[in-house]
Image 1 (tube, one colour):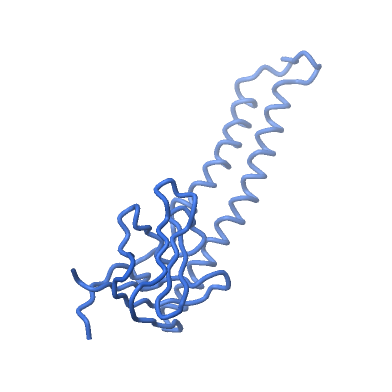
Image 2: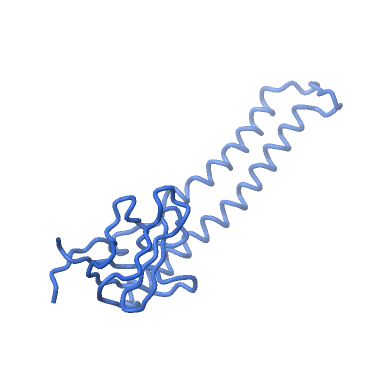
Length: 174
């Protein structure tokens, strides 16, 4: 048995807080627009088109916050569902393990307009630094990742319907 080092383990991951909090910022922006127009814009301030700027700003702020709420609900729900789905697969050990030499390695370009791809014993893997749709390993070689052609790896993975998601990655010690 080769001496392997653990490079990535989903068990150490938590939901992406930034993806959860960022959409909430847009709700806040909409509410600030509403509040500003309600408190600081004069009631009889008409624009060139005869539309009351105060009313327009208040309606715009509420609509902006409403759309941001819908977007946030979708984004947060989708992200948490993916996290808990992956966590269940990991916790129940309902994933496969493949071990062997990395072949057909295609590194992601430094510009990031591609994905990194390779196979291990005929099992294909693909990921990108810029794709955060799943919670698997996604650190490309151009950004310091551990995968390279002809290295020995052990990978715990599952098929999420789109691709094989890497839950655990171990590489041969150098």
